[in-house]
Length: 543
Image 1 (cartoon, rainbow, N blue to C red):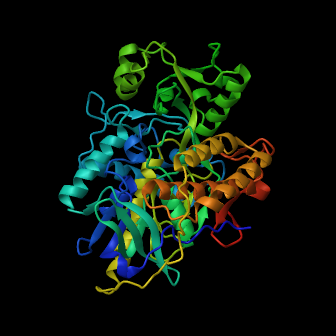
Image 2: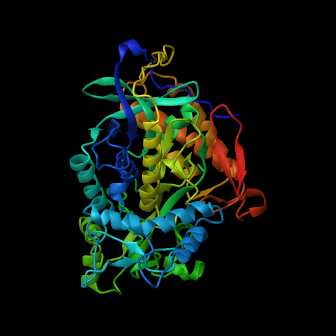
Image 3: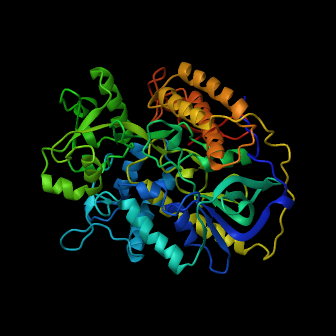
C-alpha cells in the first residue's frame, strides 16, 4: 500500500494566523538557495527562510571542494565519464553533460564574488584529486574548509549587495497547496509564531536527510524537512533508496562524527585495518581512490573480517608539514583527542553523508507540483545516478540554483502583481494526546535506520524496520506537536518510511544501495528510477 501520512502537521485557520506576501520564497540558505536568490529579478519581492542561522547547512560543512575542468590536461569528456561511472549506470547523461560544462564558469564566478580558493605559488588554482576522478580538478579553500569559505562569500553578497529579505531561525512546517499547486508555506519562529507566507513561486533548498541515521556527518538541521513536506504536498520523490555513506568519518567515543575529507586519500592517505594491513587494493585496483560506494562497502567488510569497530586512515608516510598545512581543520579536531594526523592513524568508519534521492526535478529545477521548485540535496536531478561522485554536490547546488532561480524569476514576472490569500483550513489535525518522549523515539529511529537500512540491507530487516516505523507513525504523526523538535520527528519518520519503501522495491545492488539478498546489479530490470508519491502506486521510469 502507498504510504499516506497526514497532509498537514498542525491545525490552522487563515483568520488566526498572520499573513505575508512575496513573489518568490526560497526555503533554505545553503549554496543552492543562495545561488537561486542571486538570479531573482530585483523587481520581485524575495524572502529567504532558514530554520537556523544562515550558515548552518551541509554546504558550510563541506570539507571537500568543487569539481570542474580547469586544467589543460583535463577535458569535459573525462569529467562526464567519471560522473557516469560513479553513478553506476543510472545518471541522466544530458544532465551530467550540462552540469559538467557549466562548472568552470560557476567556479570563476565564485572567485569574482570574493571566494578565496587555495592557489599555487604562482597564483594558479591548486587542483586536487579525489576518489572516482581520473584527473586533478577539485578546487578547495583553506585546505579543508571549502564550504565555509564559499558560504561566507555568497552570504555577504546576498545580504549586503542584493539586500535580500532573510528570516533566520524560522521553521517551515508545511507547503501550502490548493487545486494541485503550491502557493507558499506555513512557517513558525519563536518571536512571531505561525505565519502564512503566500508566494507566486517557491523553491525547496532544504538540504539532506542524514539525521535519520545514528552515524552521520550531517549537522542537526539535516532532518529531511523538504523531502517530507513535498511528499505530504503530493510532489514526486525519486531515488530515495540511495543514501550515500561517506567512507571515512571520525570514530571516537564522545566526539561528533566529523567527516574526514576524501581529499586526504587524494593526497596519498592509506586505509589500514586493525592489524595494520592496507586492504583497499584487495577490493579494487583503484585502492583508496575508488568511488565512495566501493570504499564504504570495503571498509564494512574489512571491519567484519577483523571483528573491529573501525579501520584507520594513515598519513605517516607523507610529509608531516604538508599534511598539517593541507588539512588544518581536521588536524585541530583530531588533536582534541590526542591524535596527530601526521603521525597517528585516524580511526574511521562509514557514516550517512549525502541523500542522492529527493524531489524529482527537470533541468530547470521544476518539480511535479506546479509553482514548486527544488535544488541541491533536496532534489533528484539525475546528476548523481546511484552514487554521487566526490565534489559534484556543491557544483550541483550552484548549477541548479542558478537554473531554478532564473526560471522561477521569469515565471513570477509573468504573473499579475497582486494576489490574495486562499482560505485553506486544517481544523481536524492534531487532536491532543498524552505527551510523547520525542527524544526517545528519535534515538530509536536513528538506531533502527543505521542497523536495518545502513550500508547493507536485505528484505527481512527492511520489512521489520517498515513495520516498526509504521507503529511509531500511527501514534506520533497524528498528534498536535507544537515546536520544531516534534515537527522534525514527524519529518524524520516520513522520510525514513519512504526510504525503506524504495529500498524494498529495488531488488538489486547498485551504487550506494547494497542488498545482501540481491548482491548483483540487474540492468535488464532495474536500470530505472523509482518514483514515489503519496496515495499513489510506485512508478518505474527507465533511462
